[in-house]
Image (tube, rainbow, N blue to C red; front, side, top):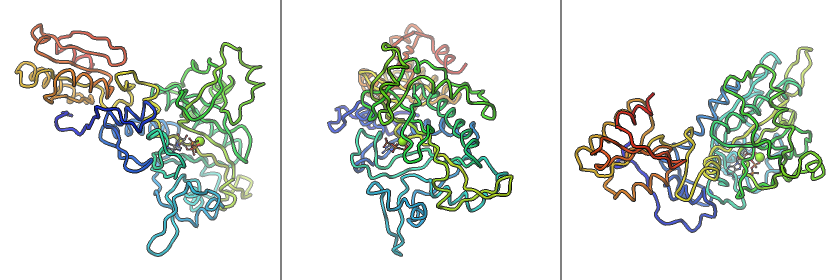
Length: 439
Ligand code: ATP
Ligand code: MG
């Protein structure tokens, strides 16, 4: 992409309304624009990151055996009356009427709808297990939308739903999702810790919130610092095999949100120097709730014994749009964002320090064309802004690599390669810099 043809409305001033660094940087880097409280337009640079995050989530869901579909944003109120949640949900639910006075709502979540889809066709244990998911916009009329996309009213969520014949089978589905979450956040370069979380009226130990530690997070958390060093399951993890050792490894050390925190247990299990008590951002949650929806909504499954029983279910959310903010909270410095490569909007930025200078234009064009051809995401700053402005903008938008091309370096046959994260700089011939990204 040539910057002269792109749409990247960066802001010079720090927006006053933004309280936390990720919100400030997303506005300054021209990633989002607020259209109403908690409702954002995703501008091109922000959209690229949102799509990269979605792609990682999708790949890992698919790998774990979940199947993608797409449910609508609008749902019938009557469906929610079947589960009893229409009245229970309260003012966070956006309720709408169509021209025929039919009551609709903008979905805050999809347990009812997926149960309706499931019960329409699945009747036998032979068709189980099933994990279905979608990546879709949600609306929750939050009392205090804030921190930009971290607590929006309209936000993008991946939500998966598992259906099983009994609790033991449901636990296997839960474990699959748990492991896939470790991989999802790990691939983004995030340390997201699964923490015991409130299970609500159902009880049991089957809910974990995946939390990224950050002072600006909204949840209070307690954990053993060793949990930060646990290994992420590899790409070859066998989802049909025994996942229990991985779950045990990740749930043995103390890690809990403040809602379920047990101070005595924390102190008994955790040496003083390893006790972390801080705040965190909830980027995902996995939850087993049995027949909470399949029972009232009548979604029975016939077991091998010929007896009908409600399917046993779980739901599994990832805050896709919140993750974009959480990633910036975790990866930035004073100059701006530092994207992990896996989610960067572009991998490489080329800065042409003297547009109009023959050799400089030629070298830039050569690098740009080679990278484009190789399928490397590259943003070429071919604008006539002064070099200082170009450096600041590239640092702000946080692309992992910068290739800086100017007449001075080219006189010695070199261009500069800068690594955004470390600030490391190297002078290389044009062909070598291209080779770095293509090999
Ligand atoms: P929170 O406690 O932060 O309000 P939640 O527990 O109500 O979130 P879930 O129903 O578990 O949210 O939704 C799944 C995921 O969706 C959450 O883990 C979070 O990452 C994301 N999410 C929830 N609410 C919002 C929001 N208002 N804005 C952005 N992301 C959200
Ligand atoms: Mg939650």
